[in-house]
Length: 232
Ligand SMILES: C[S@@+](CC[C@H](N)C(=O)[O-])C[C@H]1O[C@@H](n2cnc3c(N)ncnc32)[C@H](O)[C@@H]1O
Image 1 (tube, protein in one colour):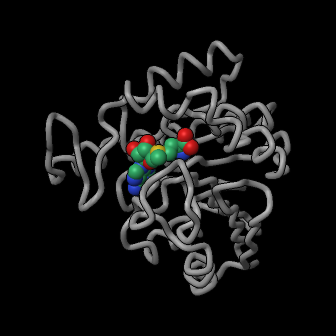
Image 2: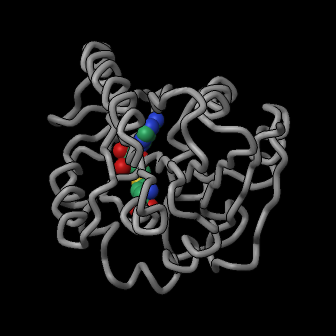
């Protein structure tokens, strides 16, 4: 990675972390875990680490195929919003080496020790955990080539305002890729249908925010892959 990029990113993260700590005073706590709005929290990180990393997930999630399809190149900067254990972040980090990084954005700091340890074991040194805010991923302006959001967008309220933040974080022709569960299909994994978002609704939302959108419904059995490209 270019050194000035690291410095700029480090500064942005420090500022972001201070904002996040201040903001937490406004979140209510439940059972020792922080919750936001109507959504359940992921504070029981031990439980979720087991769930997100369980080997059987790869059969339907196909993480290597998904990352291959992103066509990442060395030197690109990527953000993974709702990164949790870094299931996708670690894989993407290998593709952007040398010279690129992955900002692993999440609200839960409890995943960070696991993410760091796994990344170290896998020889990945370009993943930076970022403690985002519920309504802001705290990414530096025009710094990111691709933002991946897997099974997380339904946790974000006020998406219209959130898309504006994604747009400002993206470089010219940057992309947001959303991987999420079909609302209309009966599927054996993921959240209940009441939580899921329709790909066609998201397409309209992203188009209204100034993106060009494509939906892939063929690659994964239970999820669509929506690509929203920022108009130049
Ligand atoms: C179902 S998990 C998805 C984990 C990961 N993307 C994966 O595929 O393994 C959702 C994650 O999103 C995080 N999250 C929820 N709301 C968020 C927000 N507004 N910004 C960033 N992360 C958020 C949660 O803490 C949790 O780790």
